[in-house]
Amino acid sequence: MQFSPTNGDFTFVSSTEAEELSGTISAPDIKLNMSSDSGKDPYATAFLRQRGYGWLLEVEEDDGEESKPLLEELDIDLKDIYYKIRCVLMPMPSLGYNRQVVRDNPDFWGPLAVVLLFSMISIYGQFRVVSWIVTIWIFGSLTIFLLARVLGGEVSYGQVLGVIGYSLLPLIVIAPLLLVIGGFEMVSTLIKLFGVFWAAYSAASLLVGDEFKTKKPLLIYPIFLLYIYFLSLYTGV
Image (tube, rainbow, N blue to C red; front, side):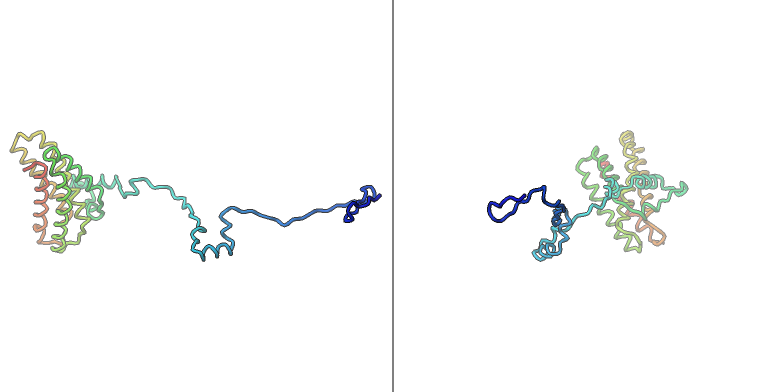
């Protein structure tokens, strides 16, 4: 059965007489990619790079490294500092400490902590000398360094700075004793001399090596005077 077309363009066929029609309609694949791979299009990439916008195609990759602890970031080794403190406070070779590590492996934070601790103790005596203690530590160490190099010593400024700073520990140890027996002038003087000799010996035994030979007193004497001056800043004498 056929139906006459209404507009002359189509012919309608009854489904009962028509053959069975089957098939598929295919369409071109259309992909929408909003990821960073769109930058791989050579035309778009070339266009952006020519216009100076190539940085838009760069992807910052996460290295995945975990953040380091603060002490490790600042290069602070508490065990190493504690060992060096024991080496300075117990300078006798018979105790078996490797005291050369104070000189051969210098650090900054340990001596700085010792100098600041000595400065805090000195506040009890004279508040105005606190800044001077840090200044004398820096420039006093520089003087010892220059003198050591002139005399033929093989030391660096960092080594001298660390040794001089750590060797202030004996003066910190005797400071509480001076507060207790300050009324006994004779005993107080002996403790002061003991502390200065202790500090000077600890520093000189590390800085004054065999390379100085007969010139050792020329370096030991300035070190001794430096610690006398440190003590005078604490006592005010």
